[in-house]
Image (tube, rainbow, N blue to C red):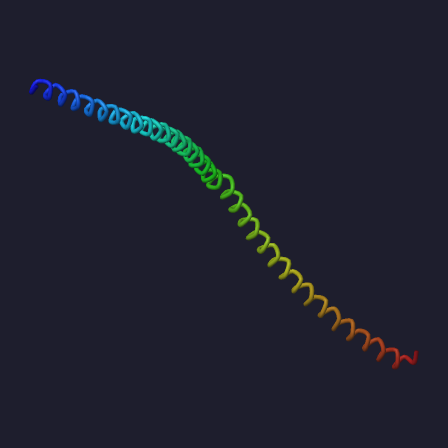
Amino acid sequence: MNEDKILHLLEKVYTEFSNKFDEFAKRFNTIEERITGVEKKISGVEGKITGIEEKIEDIEEEVKKLGIKIDTEITDKVRALFDDRQLLHQKIDEIDEKIDMLQLDVNNLTVKTLYHDNRIKELSKKLGV
């Protein structure tokens, strides 16, 4: 009889253990599926990060090219414009000086013309014309 009880208890333990093992296996499979899903998502994120890094590298390269272009082409053009501006200011200053000299000459001629007009009038009065 004791053997029957022991056998019965062993069967009961075995059944309980089997049920618990099956539950554990199901939970383990569920966790494993979730981990697989997370790993896939992480792979996707890694792929996106790699794509972003590549785009950043492309942008950095473009920025470097623009920097070189600014340093070479645009800086040279700005210098040329600045030099032209200085030349234009010098020419304008020269023209202003010439205009001032012409104004002096015109003023002198105006004074001389008035003087000669007055002299002609005086001479005309003396001559009775």
